[in-house]
Length: 68
Image (cartoon, rainbow, N blue to C red; front, side, top):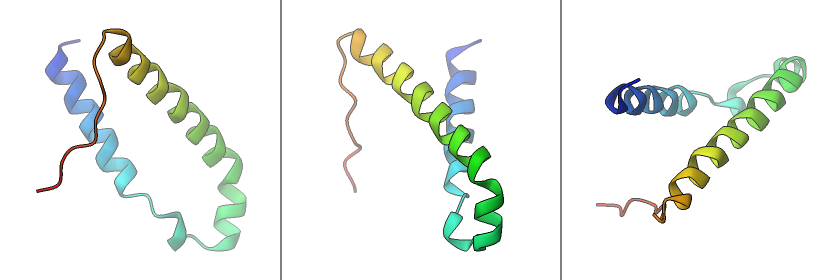
């Protein structure tokens, strides 16, 4: 896969996550989805850690963008 395609997919994932607002979910919905939500969050954490470690392993730093 080309780097540009990968970055586009990462940006699409960021946009999708930005749309998730569990505070708007009812308690029943959250309780029904907690297992799946937990699994998704654990998987995301592991994948983000893998990518970050790959960047750091190349001697680069991951920094928060400076606000304009």
